[in-house]
Length: 317
Figure (spheres, rainbow, N blue to C red):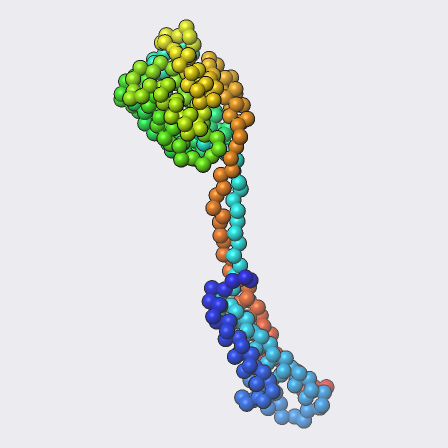
């Protein structure tokens, strides 16, 4: 016991002890527990008198000890523990997913389009990144935040699964806007490693900011951009891998061509090799009460005292 909810009640123990000592020596109130009652009127031997005297003193002693435990229980005894949560090693990642028309209407990955393949890769990626905080930005002709940085893998997986080209009405592919929005969500992160994973076919044709300028902002905040070019160069719609390579190079990231699901493994291996940062959580404080245990001792001692009162040694030899 290292703490009490009502510690001021413990000061009552001292006068209670003084009263007990005074009663023990002077007995101004007589025998408190009636062990030496006069209900047995037969002559007593010295042995019985001595034994009953011992029982009387023992019962009174236990009575006062029980009273002390009652005061301790009333003071609210307990212990305080500080639990330090498991330290999580991870990085902060923003995923920018292109859901423009070229991602939906191209079928160079038959029977799936580029968006369907991207969603599958992302869901697999999220399931493997157990200790990272991940956020999602969707973009087409404009960029919108779908999820801030989060550790909720189930929610992230569901958001990716429900993503469709109908989520954004603006037409086009605003790669620069997506990079700026993702950078804004990462700029205040305390993680040593901050990453943007950009999945697109690379053809930026709209938006308020061009991709090259947006990549400078990411670099200024120490954010690496890993671009994944979705689609085959001989596909139905145009792809622009050169632009994606420049973005990755300028931010010390890396460019990948996602022509098959196996490419995701390269992305995961690259991210796993990055320096991780400890993301400590606030220690949890738990208060454990010992009130029931102390109260049990009180009732146990009171039971012993009661037994000594009800069943005194009878005068039989």
